[in-house]
Image (cartoon, rainbow, N blue to C red; front, side, top):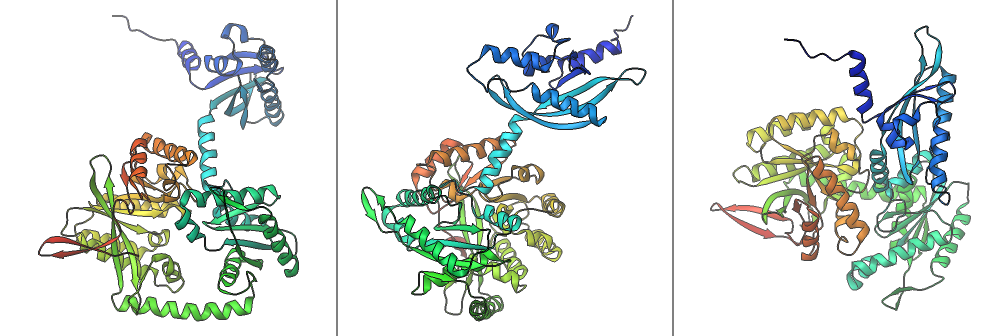
Length: 554
């Protein structure tokens, strides 16, 4: 029986002809010697039979002739020719990112070109391949927008100002904090308060200032030229006058909006110092305060001593506790898991939220001790329970080998490894992937899961999800809270959820505060919901093997 064989040349021709990547060969004058189906259909808009002997310019002009009134119909052609010449000149393989319009659609191509020689090693042209990476580029651009721009005002955000301070080295900064903005939120509602924020942002743009929204009610401006304190103060007064030049309205009612202003000049820790100046402005009679090094050092030293003492006493006195907030499985309306949230009880019995002591605990080398306490308490709480639970970890925790060993030991001893998820704060940024991946591999080998927290703001890098083998992501509450009324927020969330579904990752919506938000995220296809509408942070107590909830309002 005769075997079916395929000639090697025939096989090669079939592969190149039907490859999804564009493949071609041109002579030294840019005329096509070979072009596969992908480049004919995707770039040249021609049949394979008419390509040979013609140039990129020929096909570009032909397309443009069809749509004379649209200058952006087909902008490829010249660019292809230019990179051919560059490749020939270099006499080595080169890679290019080429972009332009193909039939009115912006297209990005990753192009590899190399000199092409005949059998006698004579240069006869250029050989090339190209891949359409438009989707990846657009995803990256959306990702970068999420990373560096505020979704409500479209101003650059805190992450962007940190990056600009690091790279551009500004000389000074002015920060404007809206006075009593919480009352505006409470009295007029979130939607109306957001309108005020948008109006302020538009006024900064209108008057030619590049402003950053660095917090919910704070805007910052950087100055790169040398200015005296007096000049900065005059600039602040000028800006406030411009912001106040026309009234702010809510439902046709005039709203008084005032600002506390901080000013700082510094070559290092500029943002920290201007924040201190703002806080001084809010607690003093003067609504504009300039950072003074000696005065603030003394005040901070006293405050730091008091806080350090509180943290040490709380650790020794077993006053580091956990509250647990439920996550609802939207599909079956059952509690899916509980998030472990740390609290510090001070010597007066007051409960302190994490933001008031966790960052400072890192400075006094007690952060790892608090992490271990939380891990121990959470695991022991759920040791004899059936529910899933999660624990928040920082990148610092993951880099600390002693802390990692403690985590592994504890989840083994309490037999909770199959029900625990470790949440990593996405906005911290992940620089050393190998350390994080090593930790993830260790905990996953025991059956534990991994989540990325606060996704959608900060760095918002989709690459993290792919590289870290994430089980679910928690979409940042700043996107969720306005999702019913803000189409832009909804679109961003839909994009995140769509991407997550495609790669098999569950999603959790934070800040679900009412039924409308819950129904909206259900429509979008989010897996789980968390927020006060679902349940507040609670202490979980065993009594006669029945669960009692002690609801604490903080």
